[in-house]
Image 1 (cartoon, rainbow, N blue to C red):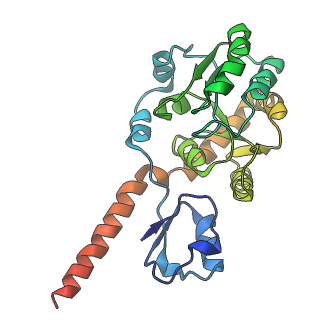
Image 2: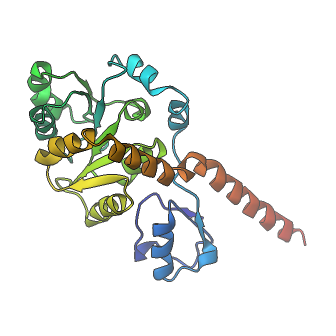
Length: 255
């Protein structure tokens, strides 16, 4: 049994000894079929998530913002850069949002990159908007749930988390990312759940366009929510399928 948590597939994963592939969406399923995997071996399950994401969905967004010390009614942007926080230019993202003169507040998750936070600290403290920084945050469900839009590199885990929460994305070409991540970004943009931009300097203008067209932003959020629908039940679906397979195997062993 193999669970694919990416938003694409490649030939290295194809193996005759794998009974079932659990994938996040139709695109990955079609990609596997083109690589020679029989349709009956592919199950569109969604991508499993931590329990904290299911719990976050139960909290009103305004309450989540209050819990984080943010203004509950103010438009909120959450910026992320992966677990290590080394794949996006935080300073340029923050400067771009400030220069766009947006009526908003920001959450900036630096991952494990304390040096990047140190470089941005003065900028954050002197910014004309409220910016809430986090370093080595153990769980990101709350800061993602509080957002109207998420700015991040196109990593598969962060994308799956954002879709689970129904959050539209601005995806930045990473500083040293793989071609696979660019495929993820294209897939999200093609699906209408986000935009892919090449540089951090374009973040502010792209978000400004979205904030000036709230219908488009709402439609993107709906598309994201639809794409993340299966993620919310993926763990249970996969577990039930594996248990069912084990049960059948045990039954056959007694015959």
